[in-house]
Amino acid sequence: MADDNEKLKRAVARGNIPVVTLDNKWHKIWTMIEKPADVKKQENALNDLLRKQGKYGTDSKDIKKLKKKMMDEILTLSDSNDPEDIKKVEENKRLIEECNDKLNKIDEDMGDLPSQIDEINRDIMDVTARLIYDVMHQNEKEIDKLSDWIAGIRVELKKNVVRKQEMEIQNGVMYSYMHDVFGSDVADMMDMKYNPMEKILKLKAIKDEKKAADAKKLADKEAAIAEAAAREEKAKNAEETAE
Image (tube, rainbow, N blue to C red):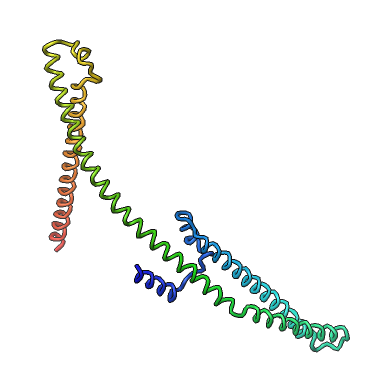
C-alpha cells in the first residue's frame, strides 16, 4: 500500500495535471463519493487563485489595448503642428507610461501565482488520486464477494428450478392417477391451488417452442452456409469461364 501511494505521488508530480476545479470529470467523482473537508478547503483556495489570475489577465489585456490605442494616436498626430495635437501626444505619452507602470505592477503581483496554482492543484490531485485508489481497491474486494455470491445463487436457483419442475411433474402424474380413480372432484378433495396437468402442458409447450426455435436457427445457419458456398462456386465458375 505504501509503495502504491509513492507511485501515485510520483505520477502526480511528473504528470501534466489539468486544473481540477475546471475539469467536469473531477467534479463528477464527488457525486459518487464524499468530498473530504481538506479537499473542499483546497478547492476554495485554488478557485481564489484562479479568480485572481483571471482578473490580472483581464486587466493586463485591457491596459495593453488602451496602450496600443494611444500609441496609434501618437503615430497619427506626430507630424502635426497643431498645439492641441501636440498636447494630445504629450498626454498620450504620459498615459502610456502609466500603462507601463500598471503592467509592471501586474507582473509583480502575478509573481509566482502560476506556480502557486500548480502546487495546490497537484496537492488536490494527490489526495484525489489516493482516495480514488482506496475506493476502487475496496470496490474490487466487494465486487469479488458479490460475484461469488451471485455465482452461488445462480447454482442454487438452477437447482431449485429443477426441483420445482420435478415436484410439479410428480403432482401432475399423481393428480392424473387420482383423477382417473376418483373423477373430476379430486381437485377439490386435495385442495389443489392449480391444475398440475395444466402446468405440465405449459412446460411441455415451452420446451417444444424452444426446440422449434433451435431447429429453425440451425436450419437458417445451414441455409446461409449453403448459400455462401453456392455464391463461391458461382464466382469460381465465372473466373474459369473468363480464363
